[in-house]
Length: 415
Image 1 (spheres, rainbow, N blue to C red):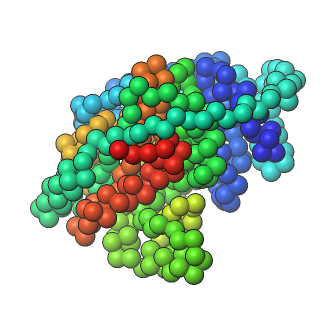
Image 2 (image 1 turned 60 degrees about the vertical axis):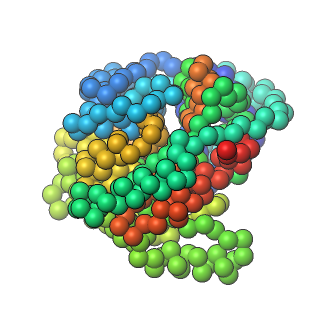
């Protein structure tokens, strides 16, 4: 099966649009499939913040089958009275969705191809010769912040926390490269091999790419149930099994990490009440520790029953952007981060995913992801961490570098 997936993705990547979502065999009670590959465009919608959700609602009515796409973080300017004026090297739209010509679903050893040209698709995939990897010239990502600037910014944010303006926020920094040449498919394949995660993404439209190794679910809908799984709390893994177990226990009992997590759980619960039948919002799992290639993460699961008559798009809009990437109170935190951050987030801390014909959906959080505009030769990677009253700026800086580790390994360096 890995070879079939490899061949299918290689063939798919020759199209103008492709969405490849891979769970990397992580067990997930809410996962509908192991891998989804949406290939080629039969219809598409591109929108900027203003009436983007409305445009998507219309697009959805016209395309009731499978659609895949992304929401950019700056749709916050549509859901709230906010603005974005930081530099944007990528120039991606705020929203893009497409209805595919061909769709492949893989679950276990079963492959389903949904297409008017079933045999053609199968033949094309079977006849693929896997390209031999070409050496990637090391790309050095430059930070938007010096370490000292980052530390000064955290100190400034903590002054706002002391004044009671906010309780917690997600403060992000960009690492970028100009005049960058990469082979997006090869970079993604390497990234996915080094850091397999349950919400990994290869997304292409025209010459733009999202190459993601995300561990986090933003929001899913299963029948009448909405599920959100915010991540707050990170610890670096150890190769020694005993030491690694000790690190897990420390994360499970760490006051700052628990405080971060519970504040975001409260925020997510509050967001879900906008879409929920009264009294149905509940926390299914609090402070769950989940292990990935490089890190242990603290993940909580918040669920509710969706209100009768509420559309899938409205449910997404009601909770967007996700609380784990904003802070609390949500609007104040987003306003402040616009002041303190040095770059527009764009698709980073937005979401990539799909809506299926039964109107279920599943969207990740765009983190641990490389964004690439091949026409502008601009490569971007953001990393963020939660700033609370107890945060230590140097440790938060180190956490950002830890989150960037897999990407740096693939590209070959950081200035």
